[in-house]
Image (cartoon, rainbow, N blue to C red; front, side, top):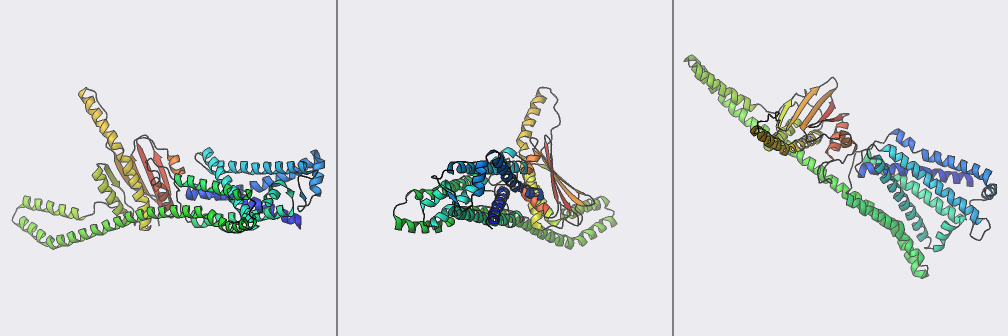
Amino acid sequence: MEAVLSYLFIALSDISFMLAMLVIVLVSACFLGRYIKITRKMVIATCGVLIFQIVFLVGMEIILKIRFPEAYEILDNMSNTDMMTEGDSQYDLVKTFSDMASLILNGGVFIYAFIFYLLAYKEKRLFRATESLICLWLYYQYINNMIMYTYVYFRGGKFELLDEIYFNVGGIENIIIQDVMIGSAFIISVVLFLILYFVYFKKKRFYVVRVRDRILFVVWLVIFVYFPSLPMYYSEMPGRYKMLSYVFGALLPVLGGLAPIILVMTVAEKNLREKNEYQETYLTAELEYIEQYKRTQTETRAFRHDIINNLSLTNMMLDEGKVEEASQHLKELLGSVRALSPSIITGDEMLDCIVSMKVDKMKEIGLDYSLDGVIDGGLHMKPMDVCSIFANALDNAIEAASKCMDTESEKVSQKESEKESGITAGENKAPRVDLKIKRTEKFFIVRISNSAKEKVDVEKLFMSSGYTSKNDKEHHGFGLRNIRDSAEKYDGLVKAESDDNTFALSVMIPRK
């Protein structure tokens, strides 16, 4: 029974570590802006920790049995409840092997975790893997120290308990604290994994914690890794200190959980502000559409009122032989009809609104633009998602193209100076944004291309969800993530292409 329980807690410890590895991956995706996909292969790969432990234990037993038979016999005859102290004759030998085994085992699983993270990331692998390994180490130190010190404080804050944990080998007290730590760490890892995966990752609730907040959080972790041990060195004042131990033991988990709660609340509030901004863009587009519709209806009613009179007047001119006057009148009448027709027609009402708004912005900036193609029957998407995809895409295109305005001004000045010098210059093209709609058998493809100052690293653009060329990196650079997430809701695809002076983003939405 004792052996079964021992193996059970070893398995729980390994599973807890495997879950912790995935927890760090989920934290990177949900709170650090890393683009990561949780795959079945990734989950299976964590089982390497369990395999490593089994191979290590079997290998260590074989090595001990062959090379160190005396130590093997002592360890083999020891029960988990047997305790060896510094006064025992075999203490140094057993303690040395115990420490070495613990060091090799812990070092091995962390090396395996590093390799796991190295393969999990697609961009800046060495940096990301190192970052994740540090987070994993802090996580384990934080959780284990919190559990251990909370246990010790609830046991009356006895300093002797730590002596038994750190300096003695075996013993019932050591077994209890190890079982408590393994069981508690397992429960915490399971809860964290379930919350991160089902509440955040699966529902695509991604937040990006600012660098300042990350530093504060790490400082908080370090404080709570080492601070609880300080009162242990003051073993006097029995009664008052014992009461302090119970109070501190009760408050420790609360204080330890305060920083993550505040952090999550902060980033959630930031995300809410971002959503409100998108909602505001959406409502602005809707209001613009309503206003445009009202204006069109008013103009249509006025035109319908006058059309009969205008046609009668034209007919009268023709009867009187005034052909030129009638022709001129018809031209004016056709101009009025064209004015009533919408200038932007994409085939989707919400997209019409968004493109109309962005065209006005392009006219104001001085960018050239073009629209080609129609979506037959509309996109069949929620208006908010249409806004999230195409408002973001067009904003990015306009911003990139507008950065070429200074470059073009420099080219114009250079061209004028070359003309003055008698040098023939090449044709100068103004910065522009083009929107083309194509239809295939299965997809509507909306391609938005724009002038660019230089070639864009497309792989970096998609692998790093927080990539941005703006100085304000805390509030920008996440438009592509919203575009990609909104398109994936409809089983759509997003693709980007770039050359030295053009960038193009293609959004493919399945046809219904």
